[in-house]
Length: 627
Image 1 (cartoon, rainbow, N blue to C red):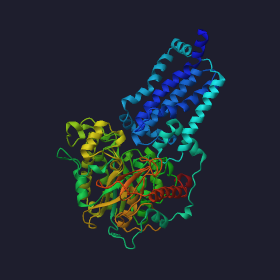
Image 2: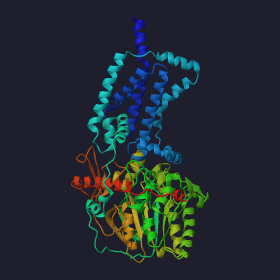
Image 3: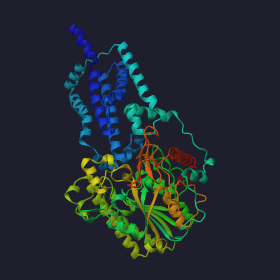
């Protein structure tokens, strides 16, 4: 009898052993991702999926069973780890679409490793230990003997498999309609969610709205705006140069920020006071971050649902700001010190029609920080090139992309322009602030250079942040305490995505701080109004925020699907609209009746129209195909 018990115990050893290991990893992943974790939640949501996999191993793997168990353990561990790291960086759930980012990860490895909480590595502990044992043949044989790899009884396996699959279906089926991906993953379980996303996306074909049914009147109605017959400022900057400066990771709280009496961004502060400043302006980027901001600003379309715009739309003939400016007789160019292949920018620039781009090949390797030359080098060489363009006698549109203040903000200390107090030393918030202080200094040098060359007064200059720099879910306790010190309250979602917009148009407008809400999608129509360029032939999803007060801004990626901003609040859905949360735009705003379900449905429809329109644009004819 004892011998029989030993055999039965040996039969289930790998099943039980790896169950125990993956339960521990499940709890580790849930603690890292979900704000509230019911004690039995991870077991009820993840264990059925794990057991279903193990049953398949018991059925079909008579040979090399230990290798299959180890492989499944490694794959599940990889999924959990990817989910933890992706949530730490983006605040959303990872899906298989993120595999398209793999070639970008090596370029931002410093950013990725900076977010790695030490306890995350515990998820690989068993793999390291078992790998060490398997490295030597004798130990590998002992491991196999320990597991005693005889198969479990077919009846037992079938019963466990049937119950596990039934529980997986029970976890998935009622929660398919949830708009909030975090809530959906929590209700389904991470493994069920990842599987559901794969099969649901492969089985359903997105229903596109017929392109002929998409028009500007319909878009304006959904947005709730009526374009004025005689808009203010129309054409008042006609014929001037247009310079758009995209500031890396620049958030709005930096404007007028002082730490122990030190002004952090004096140049941007002065620009905000002396020009048109929009304090309630918001990012609209996704997986592609900086490149997505370039896409949205230059097209006035929304980013795609699951991918960076540069991965999804570069083969389309995209209506764009460069093409509008070229039709008005402008020379167009874009400047960026990274390599043009990063985020497939080269194809994006062709799709939106820039005459040429300047990348690392042009800027060289002088004073390299992170991915390329510093902002000082960027601005110095850009100013020289703009001077040549001005002397050519043709107005120009140029976009300039800054980069030195890039995550993880570990800029060399020799570039420091300020000394922060001890509490801001050696942490992400402090590193971010000193990086942005340097970026502000370099911008000031650029502005002075443009003024000396006579370019500034003959140009409309638009300055905005590309995306957030300090995700609340990436900050540790001390970082959140520092943000509380800065804001005088808890740091929240609406603060996180708030970026500044400043428009300098000499001779056009007196200094003015605008209280109305805007987003990156609004830059194209606002600039077109100032430059006197008609948008009659350019469908756009933004609006001229110099002439509109109400706004409806759908958000994607950094916030759950179904999130949107209006002129009063940021709305984030729960499982659906009715259990969602509102975050007032104004600090003294009330928390009730700030958004409506109609706005929620209109925001979703706007996204659907943008997706449908861009996907049905003609394919771009590549130059090499026509030669």
